[in-house]
Length: 178
Image (cartoon, rainbow, N blue to C red):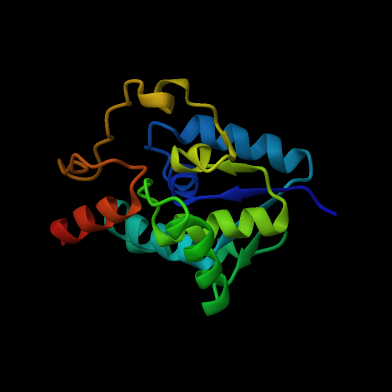
């Protein structure tokens, strides 16, 4: 069986956006993983989140190019289903009510467990909280330590003061910018 790593929105975005402060670390991690024959796995929910983020923070052409590339072999995009979402809800959202996992997080965790994927390419601490290994390593963001400042994008626009690890808050902030 081919080794796999799960790629979250916070992994795809800096990979695609060279101006992102995490671009070099994420790109290096992806190069290393691919060189070792590791397949990049994600879900259509993560693809949708990433598309919207790229559309709002980069531009339409970048967002469309991401859509064209993300589902090419050897990458694998798992399509969410009602059954998968129900399993994710029961295994992650209801079971860990003390955590602010999004539905996208929960579906990602369910996919990772079902496929035996131990590691995620992500900047989202929720994956570590759920028991997965995360790459690239970010010692400053784990266990409540100081977080890195949010990047600035575009013509003087800045990303609102939201937690990049919180998909729901990030999407809400993007809606406020629209």
